[in-house]
Length: 186
Image (cartoon, rainbow, N blue to C red; front, side, top):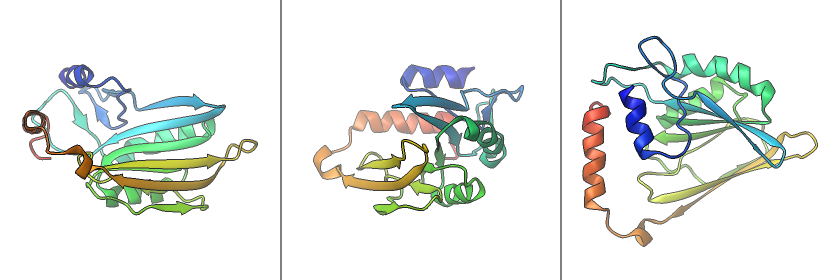
């Protein structure tokens, strides 16, 4: 409906969200996508923070309800499983703990900058790159070619705010208007 049409006008990347559903409980966006890069199958699941909206043609379900069945479906089909989650950082840590089959959680919404780190652990890795494009982050997943298992995870972040200059006033007004219309409680 209206939400999907609005989002498609402004976004060219795949729109993923496992927990935004229409009034018939059908996904508004694709819940996940599978990509293949250099023989490695990568599953990417999308999740959106639950909030109340004045828009009445969709509902946002609790992400932990919708992610579980998708993880069960995708994990056997992919080598790497990533969750793109626009939720609070602490909520994403809980999701990573609840679903250890997820290799990487790319977090948003809290606007925190997680520390740079590296890990050989098989435990989920949760990262967030600050706020409003002031930092740029990179995550490296080192995959063993024969076993197709992740053997190392690394994250790095760079502050770019001082190089960007002042925020664009027109873009700030557009963002504020979109929040008022689509997510007044966010």
